[in-house]
Length: 199
Image (cartoon, rainbow, N blue to C red; front, side, top):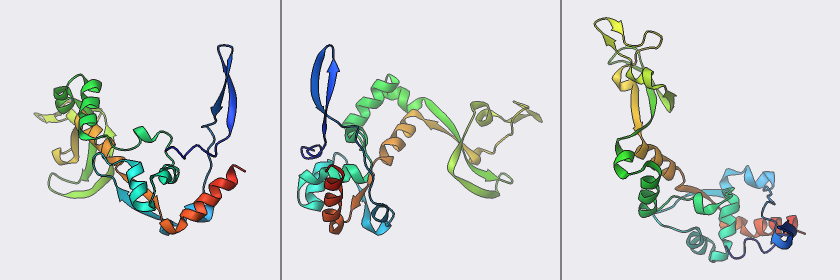
């Protein structure tokens, strides 16, 4: 990341009657439309556990200094929090957030409707993504011919599920695993584009 900000302009910032000359990190820019809209310029890459972006840049572009290209292509604001946590970091984060590992494993984060059934055995369609439903929709059932909650529908067991805190956090973490890599043949073009923005 050492080269990422080298072309950024600085700005004077006054705090507590002292003036600091700081890098203006709020400056953002977009790719040329013809580059960003061409899906053939990008490749999906799946990060392994603990894999760092500078290592990916070194492997793919031949130099870790091009990590800024990965950050730019993926429109990352804070790369530290936009890549998946390692198992150790993830477990520590979850335990801190939910009080204990047990709370994460057993606590319900939300409820989802995953499919629509015509009958208990006849599925009409899957819902992808699933719909988040209220707890009473999830719990609603018919007891002796009477709905537990009269004002909401009764779903079949295969239509719904409870998502635990752990499942929710695991999905969020996994969603960060796939990143985009710019085709190495476009590297020179993107360097020229970035340099022209800061002229």
